[in-house]
Length: 238
Image 1 (tube, rainbow, N blue to C red):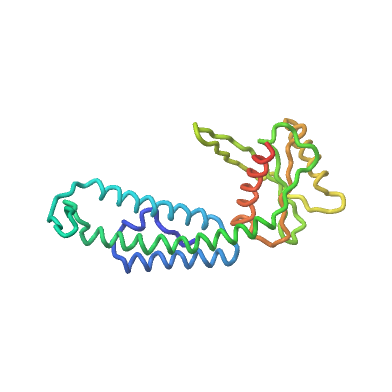
Image 2 (image 1 turned 135 degrees about the vertical axis):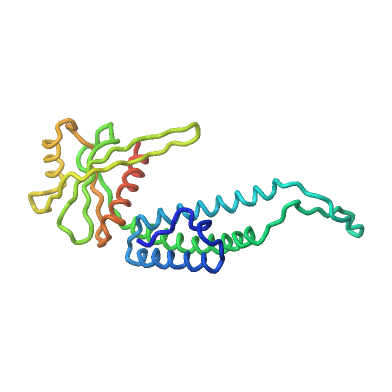
């Protein structure tokens, strides 16, 4: 992956043409991966850079607004006093402003592209429980299948809830367990029964199938989407 350093906008030379070249090379690589439906870590990385640029622009404007003003002249025709900041944007700050004003809209274009692909692929996901679901749905198994593969990949999952006074966050942690080749005998129900024998601590584990008929890159797209979809599903049925 062609990465973009966290401090790319301020490191080395703060030069508009140079930073434009660096950004466009990065975005081209991101777009190539989006075209191949490889969304992660490219989409989350792009979101992080976009938020950083927005915060930098807001912080710069806030800092500039805090400087005092001085009266320079009085406009008698319009009956008001004209002020100017005691500190003005020098060449470096103006170059930074130019970079931000170019970069943020460019990133928005590719964020929208990534979101459209994500929404399309998410719409093709099917998720459903296997057997009875226990009261504790925060830990169990994901059974994953994508494309024409006959293999069902099994992951253990555990959801952790973090709360603050205004919001609740859910984080999901997964670990690979095994792979089953699906057949007439090896059904999703049979896999669940085998998992119960494998781990008797969970006598009736929450077990969900997440599958797609599309051939989606597994590590870069399907697994991250499956994790997010399961968190949403469980939150919606809690």
